[in-house]
Every structure is written in C-alpha cells, then in structure tokens.
Length: 143
Length: 148
Image (cartoon, rainbow over all chains, first blue to last red; front, top):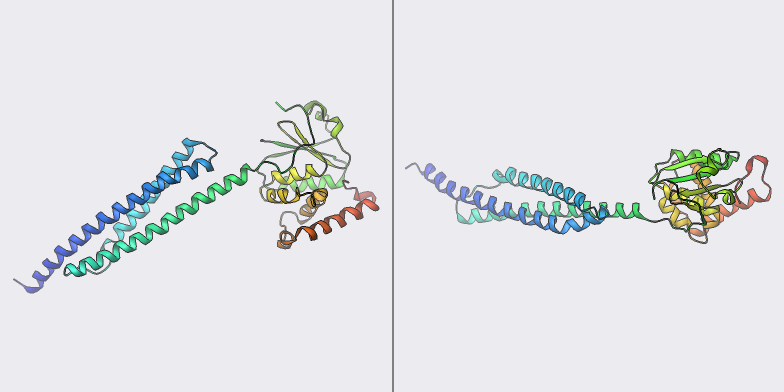
C-alpha cells in the first residue's frame, strides 16, 4: 500500500476521533454553562424587572439562545483549525488545546453575561430610588 | 409615582429660566409645567392655595404630595435622568437651603454641566451657592428676583 495513503488513513482515524471527542466535550461544556446562567441568572433579572417574572423569564430565555448560538457557532467554526493528529499523543495534545480555547471563550461569555445582568440590576435600582426628601404638605390626589 | 407637576410663577424670570431648562432635559418621570396664573390651577389641585409662594415654584406629585421651597427644586432634579444623583446629594442638610441656586447653576450651563462642577466638594459647593443666594437677596435688582 502507498505509505502516504497508509499514514493518511492512520492520521485520519485519530483526527476524526479527536474531532468527535472535541465536539462532544465542547457541546457538553456549553450546555452546562448555559444551564448555570439560565438557572442562577434568573433571580438577577426578576429583580431588575421589579418582580415581573414573565418578562424576566422571557429575557432570560432570549439571552440563553444568544449564548448557545455564539458558543456552538464558535465551537463548530474552530473545529478544523489546529494540528491534525498523526498519533494518539498529538491527538490528545490538540484535543486539550482546542477544549482549553473553548473553555476560555465560554469563560469570557460567562463573565460578559454576568456584567450584563449586573448592569441591568443597577439601572433598575437607580430608577426605583424614592425621593430623598419628604413632602411639605398634601393636596387632593389627582384622578 | 408617574407625573410630577411643576407649578411656577410665570412672572418671575428665575422660574421661567428653570422651566425652560427643565423642559429640555431627559426625564425619568415626566414633568408637566403649569403657571400659577393658569385659570384651572385651583380647580385641578384642590387645597394648593396656601402653598403658592411668590417668585418660587412648587412640585406636586400625582398622589397629592406637595414640595415647597428648596424641596421643590430637589424634586425637579429628582425627576431628571442625569440629575437624580444630584437630588440625593443636595438633600443633605448642609446643601438643601441652596437647592434653588443649584438648579439655577445647572440651568446656566444649558445641558452640558462641566466636569469641575461634579468634582466640587460639599464645602466649596455650599460656599458657591450661598454666595449666589446672599448677593441676590441683599440687593436684588428688579430683574434679579430669585427665591429665598
């Protein structure tokens, strides 16, 4: 058999296996982070929207959809970049670096989401501030 | 609280200047300006007569709370998006008497308050506004009527 073909076939098995492992691990991690944000971010949003749970749930869901789109998009786009694996060692090394990169991007997105949540909450608190003084008198309330 | 009604003396130049500036600023709570001289004033705000102060303005909320004197000016700032923090700062007892002068100060900058104003400490700010108030009270020229 042509030695190049044999090498390509061997490398192909490792690369395909590495790709599949990369996709499985990255998608699982994305789902985990998204569920964490969905569950724990809800309380921030409910507070920002003054207890309006329907609105908070809706915005939460929209943010999670955006999160999935960006992250799974990045994961799938980054699939083919990086070294191809000729043997098990290179496969593991490449897999590790690619998963590491995905984790860093997920981390950045996670903190960005937290930043967005806290900004919404702070803005809502500012709007809800009562007047810093008490009235001097009263008239009949307006209709 | 939704609307805040600002009742002002339409014959007083200071009130007119403040009203003109407040109308241009973005507001978290919509401000509605009604001059004392409007015929429907007493009918709309039952019981407002004792509070009407010459050469000054009043703030009345839709719930019927009335703010007079410096507190009325605090409420003007409280309603504005960019000056709500100023309202909290000026409600301090050291600065409260000069709230009217503070609104006059912001009005004179016509929307673009320079950074040095925000960096003034309470003592310097109080001195600045107090001087403004004392000089106009001692010998106000006919056009310089400003609230006490």
